[in-house]
Amino acid sequence: MNVLYRTEATATGGRTGQASTTDGAFSVALVTPKELGGPGGAGNNPEQLFASGYAACFLGALKFVAGQRKVKIADDSTVTAAVGIGKRDDGQGFGLDVALTIALPGVEPGLARELVDQAHIVCPYSHATRNGLDVRLSLAA
Image (cartoon, rainbow, N blue to C red; front, top):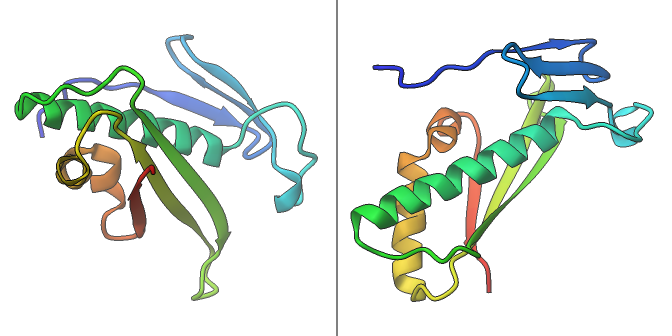
């Protein structure tokens, strides 16, 4: 693979700590949610960061795919990623549950489904999760 961009981030403290990119452009306080035995409160957690990254990346993939097909994606189009974490059924650790809801105003539903399906092939997050995570895709009503 010809890498076009690379970034680097370091985390300290695990789920309750700090994470930041080495270039200083991004820094976040990490707090474990109460549901996972942590204190909750101000800060973010890895699931929130993953959801944000996946949503943004998938929308970027949609715009790329639509551009190839000369389809205009409205500026108010959205991708909402719902990410959950829980114990895996095999008892060997934890797994993620992911659902993406895509809103493409002004795009006919059949075409929107084609674009979403193609974006799921193009998106690097979708590619990275393809063999270990069932990502559910739905179009917003």
